[in-house]
Image (cartoon, rainbow, N blue to C red; front, top):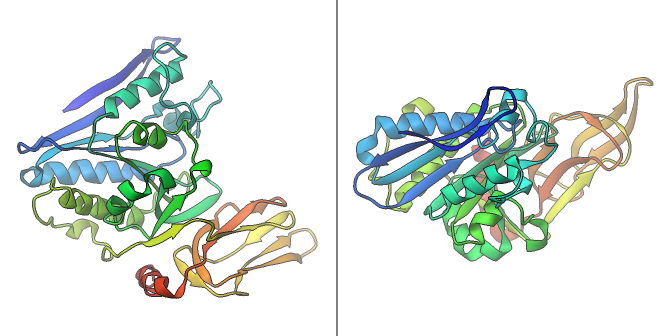
Length: 329
């Protein structure tokens, strides 16, 4: 059943519409919400929503509860291929929980938040931006670590990154929901303006696995049409064990490195070159042994531009990292 959660007049005979698909099965009371499209240049969630709507309805007898799918929280941004809300010059994921008496964007955020409150789980799906490619990962505020990590471990992503509270903006949808008692997991994967089919299908598989753990999905499901690798225990990162590689000069960053791989200290990540002179300006190497989970996708860099993120794992975590890395082959 399609429901409108926001309907707002636009200046010239049009309306801003935000809709959700409510799919109910069985007599279960639990509610699982999948939201995406907060940033108009992040498209991975569109395929995830499509596959979830298709498969849940196809196997509705296995659902015991309600699945709600919100494909486009920022439809104007998606329509115009813009990250933020057009004409307002703002990032929609920086205005939650919004305001009932605020601007159009703030009122929209307020209604979205109110509609999601009370769900047993909200999955907020993001891609990276145009500049970076990310391994599938869940990002969690350290304040919610104890509550959320056990759920994140069932999603089948490569990486669960527990952030310090200071690094998590309070005006995000996830923070607004978690701070009011509605569980929300943030997924990041892929790169902006593109859809990675494998990553999307693997996350769909993980969502069904999480719903099964929550008692909402009654049994296994035939996912032969979206076959992916096995769901593995994710790598778990907490604290300051992530190394950021930033450019030490401006130029064109050339790399064939892929995310989801183990790198060794001193191993080449890429080069920064000068197309005019044909010279290599900088050799970019890994300063540590670790797991590469972020790599720059957009090749133009300025001094200080982020090029990669690497997780420094310990001996106890080595097997988990090797399993995840092997699955990415």
